[in-house]
Image 1: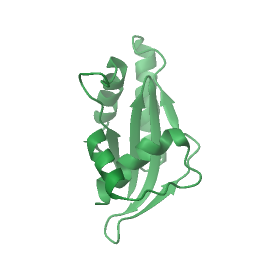
Image 2: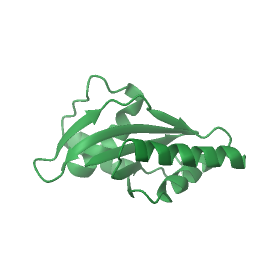
Image 3: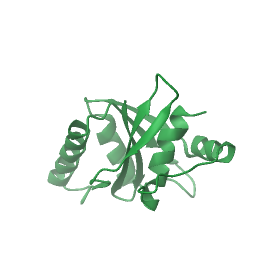
Length: 140
């Protein structure tokens, strides 16, 4: 099953794709794709929003993504997500091609504390949270 982990930061959608064997031993293999980010240029411009939505759908189709897991952002407080990230999240959730679920930063942190994480060598530093969203959803 191809799963895409996503972290939303500013106007960037940071993408990490893994092949997860959910029937066997929950083996997770990172897939190093050329596209690692999709950007929403101007969230107030209709054409840019449509282009962003089309880019997300194309990415899902071209990579046969079966599930998306998004790292949630806080809605209030010091570390709350910006309005643009919530708009991007809604666009991703509205896709009709695959399921979308959310995972909290606290769940990811709890997983990190309980487990020794070894990141794939070709995973970029900025992709780590998206990767953790995937593995913390499947490995306990």
